[in-house]
Length: 60
Image 1 (cartoon, helix red, strand yellow):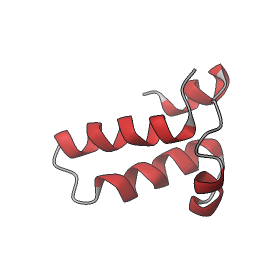
Image 2: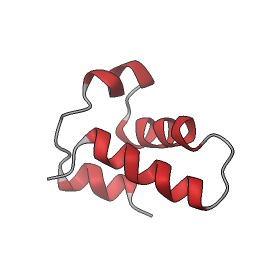
Image 3: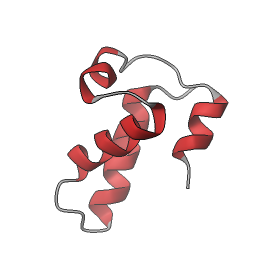
Image 4: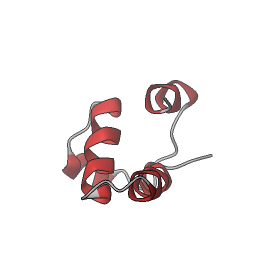
């Protein structure tokens, strides 16, 4: 099962490969928005596994 941190890492890599200027920050904002969490809450939930409905909101 994928965790919040793993999704942020994968999103960061995806954005970096496409030349986004601040890929980690952008990934945190995108994932946080999709999950309804602010950045601090993301940090507190790094190890939490994501449910299928949460993953569906993140996937393009």
